[in-house]
Structure formats: C-alpha cells, structure tokens
Image (cartoon, rainbow, N blue to C red; front, side, top):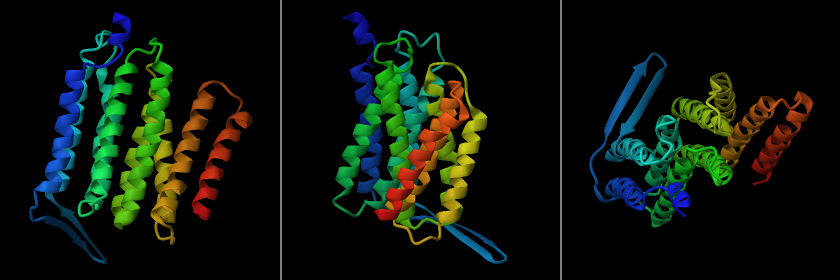
Length: 270
C-alpha cells in the first residue's frame, strides 16, 4: 500500500499548484486593464503585437506551473536518481497553451468550459508526469500513453486557437515551430531512457512550421488547419519512435502515412 501511495503526488501540493494557476487565469478574466501595443515598422512591413494583462498573467501561470511542478517532483522517492527538469516541460506548456483559448473566450460564457477543461488537463498532466519519474512503476505505461495523448491535444488546441484568433503568420509559424519541437522532444524521451532526440525534434518542428506556413492563407477553418498541421506531427513522431526500435524503414513508414492521410482526409471533409 505504501508503494502505491508513493506513485501519486501529494494531494496538498497538487491542490496548491492547481489552485494558484487557476487563480491566475481567473484574475485575467476579472481584471480589465488597457493594453499596450508593440509595433515594428520596416519598409514594406508593419507588425503590431498587442500586450494585455492576460498576456502577462499567462506567462505568470506558466512560470507558476514550472515552479510548482519542480516542487512537486522533489517529493518523489526517485527524485534523487533522475533530474526533475524534464518533467516540467509538458505541464508548463499546458498552462501556456491554456491562455490562448481562454483569451479568445474571455467575453463568452464558454470561458467556464474552457477553464474547467484546462484545469482537468493540467491536473492530469501533472499527475502523469509525477508517475513517469520512475520508469519501472507499474502505471508508467498508462502515464506515458496519457502524456502522449495530452501532448498532441495541446498542440491541436494551440494551432486551432491561433487560427481562430486570426493571428498573423509571423506569430503562428514560430509558435508552431517551437511547440511542435518541444512536444516531439518530450514524447520521444518517454521511452524511459535518458536519450534526447534533438535532431528529430528540430526536424519535426521545421516540417510542421513549413506546412503551417504553406496552409496559412488557404481558406481553411480553424479545425481543418489544426488537423492538417497536427497530423504530420503525430506521423513524424511515430516514424522516429519506430526507427529507434530498429523497425525496417518500409514497415515504419506504413503507420505514419496512414495517420497523416487520415488527418488530412478529416481536414478536407470537416
């Protein structure tokens, strides 16, 4: 019984972490303040980036998540054997990604649904990351599958939200590049080893960014755009995993091609 308890984080620490992050997002809805616009003007190019209190609070929520997750993982029995830093990535991204749809829904009653879904996702990611500290834990496989699913869902939510908000390509493409690279890096590291596939992560991020740039001006709905970019991320990450397991290239390419094809077909007919 004691061994089973050690696989789950402290409820007190989890409660403080989730509550502090949710309070930060709640403040972004309750407090209204004038925004600040940063502009860049060059010959033939003008870009204006609005900064609001919500932007700073989203960054604060991400920072609180990183600090809180670090505090949470240090309570794990195996924390001294493995660095807790890798377990901060997905929770921090979750808090950061939550800010985009919540900002879009700030004037809608649907904000509360986004708030609740975001809270559930954040709690699930934190618990799964805590479990994944010990690859020999009986529930590690379940935690790995959950983290992988949530990571792809986060990317889909981010890309769809950016498309829905009408963000310019100069903001969308760097966001896709960075988040796709970080998500693929974390997923590929979930094999239980200490190997970091930086070349694959950079390559996957670049491919997703190029696809996003090519589709940016197409008349696609936010969901279509999100599926069209998320499909290649899923497929390329699956290909990298298969090649790492020494699966022959022809066999390894079957699954990714099917996944990418299904995602693109779904994007066409939605």
